[in-house]
Image (cartoon, rainbow, N blue to C red; front, side, top):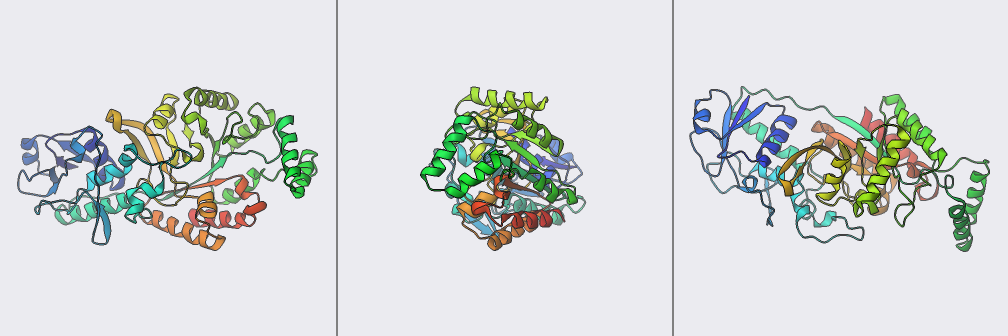
Length: 435
């Protein structure tokens, strides 16, 4: 067991030492505020404080983890041994030139997203506002890099420690914003669709809608059997996130009362696991989230425990607090729509730390590594360029024993419209990520 001495043991320090030392490095750790216990301990140990209290291994604490208030942090970046770092040390006696625990906590708690900030048109925190993007380390899992620097330090000074590293795993996820392209809609919405297509001269669309509604052709977005067929050879089951919301401007799935829709959801739940995809409007209206969650649970005849926010919209800390109220245990919203990379600087699941309440929660956050819409629509990459980005992300996450979470949509695998040819990208991604 590794003993860490600190002048006090706030929740922030408990949380981040458990994540970095236990979860990432695989070392059992205990913290103590007792100088006597620390001095008398014969096992591996180091002190974490603003000044050295005794001979031995010492890492300077910036003080950030001992402050329970939410205050503006003027965080700057530097480079140490080729790795970007924040919260640089000033004490020359510190064994590391930066505070790895403060740095990691700042990233995974999403401290910067609690600050006054500019938002995009959907009310989301833009990647371009983040320190990771501004300091050019968004594509680097810096928390793992900092943990590796800590590991090297401990190996040098405390060689009796035995590290147990995590194993890589792949989690494919599918968002279902539109269960079908033409089916499952009310008569008024169907006729409105015909009318819009006619007014805009989209005659091929009119023909496709007619053939689908008359049973002459399958619905283009009915790609569920295909998705299962791609993943089945690798023994990987998908997570399906369902937009189960009333029709609205940005939330326009099929009619939630549709019996065919309900049958589809129950079928998907047999081949993977179905989770809630809370609507954009539910971020502002708690009662809508309640209706959506209860409705989906009723259809599946079980409690739903996984979620991903529509449009990846997270409002800190309200979004996660709301999910906890409904018994959600795992959320898969931690990513940027506009950029691939590591929004929280980490590639393994981690607990949501409620900064405003100074509270460690049991809600597990699973970072999203790459999304189809990010590659094609935001970054405007072609299929070859997209596969290069995907392969790079997989290799990076595999090298640190992380969790590669992919985000695709059933409609992007339809092989139609501007998604023509992207089935091949998905198939190659699954093969690369699974082997």
